Length: 229
Image (tube, rainbow, N blue to C red):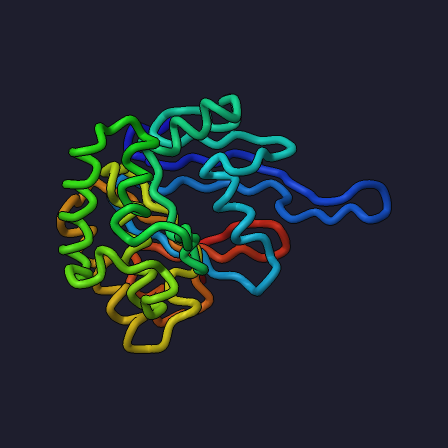
């Protein structure tokens, strides 16, 4: 593993289905994402971008190949080990927010901190701080259904940051938002970079204008990942 790399992927292969229905998604992906950089992955719908992100985050297991995040072989971890590693080292931001509807926004963010082992009082304090930073001071006791899409995504970003992870994985974070809300989210990512320059961001997007904001752009096509020409 290169000491300057946050994410290192070697000969990653993955498929769904069996026999004649087998669909190869990744056919030997290789890449190295430098520490402290923002990289975007472009690709057509259904090409495997989300699968790749899930594999990097330990949510799925590849058929073969290796993935190291911060020097840790994610593929070698047990399911419980992967969850523990993820809670402390990786922040996920999903297109559909994935906030728990029965909890208010403060509880949603604090839950992520509690699962990582933070005490209740500190978890609530840390969550409140982050929600204030993302502009949700007046929404702490609101449930997700009472918020706009943009507000839900800002809450989801606060949740991703609550354990101060060195790596952020974002799956189309502006995909369900209007232009104004999407710009607010992108501004947040810019602030995230400035506040902790060593943090690495890997973002999936179909929007080339968003990709231009990144330090590097990779294209996933035909199961392979290559730099944007």
